[in-house]
Length: 183
Image 1 (tube, rainbow, N blue to C red):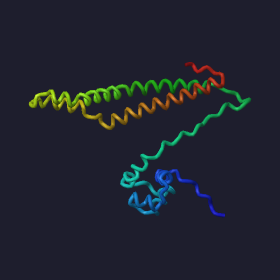
Image 2: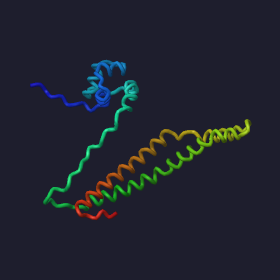
Image 3: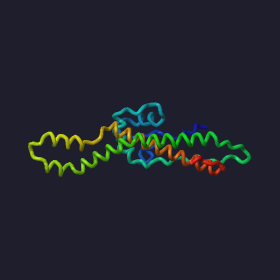
Image 4: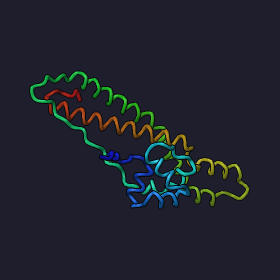
């Protein structure tokens, strides 16, 4: 009896399955070979940057992966100690608030840039042609934030959201088991 294949969870396999492509068709799109696609899907080869860049437009079209729910009530008759959960709930709430505070300057900077960008055309039109310094100031203020700042903002925002979700799940678990969440 032959071995049963384990479905691949690689990005290439997900793209191929979503778009109904054969390994040969995906290989043509990525300008590589079907054998290389097979190795990618089996985890025997890494995705080189050039191939990743060609795969990215297809990957962006994939639907988001739904989170697998992990919910289980306390087994009947088993003791329930809420203290570790209460400690974790406190941790989640504290660090979510901390992440939101750390993200605030990035959000404020993005709002300022958006305001400058919205007014940029009108401001430049109102300036005399010889106002090079003022034009440079407007251009500088309307320039997009550095990518590192945008990434930092997103990471902090996502960290706060994840901690908020965890805190909500912990509070619901504690409530279901009759423990006060210290809200």
